Image (tube, rainbow, N blue to C red; front, side):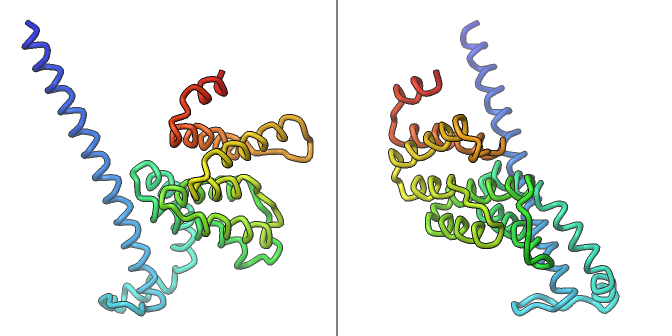
Length: 219
């Protein structure tokens, strides 16, 4: 009976693993398809500097005529692609799409406003940059957000420290932000910012194996 039970458990585990791998594969293929579709659309509208086959004239005419509509559709889909990219380990794709969404309002408006959606994209961009280990880019995003949107997102500096493997310093800075947010009216963190800070405090503790401090902090 024990052998049969063990065999059944192993079989179920293998099936679950195969199912998860199959979902991961399909998700990655979806991201790659979206990337190829966007490149092909750009090639049909403006041509391409790299080696891509030229599109037929009817295709070029269609996408050139409907280029604005197609670009709007791409921008609506980008947030979903960012989430899928982050959950499937495709951080580079998440970086590209998040940067595109953050840059978009600055094209037509010199005084762009940082909306909650744009703030969420900035958080997603930072999560992706943490995964690809780019502290200089994170600090560059902090400077760019301050210049373009007029917001000093202090947690970006904390993330740059974390990405530079300065975990103890990052923990202190993250916790100070949460404390200031609770005690000061000047600092008003959005929900996505608060969640990001809490997640990164946990990750920093994990990175230095500070389990007891993590348990104490969560309690």
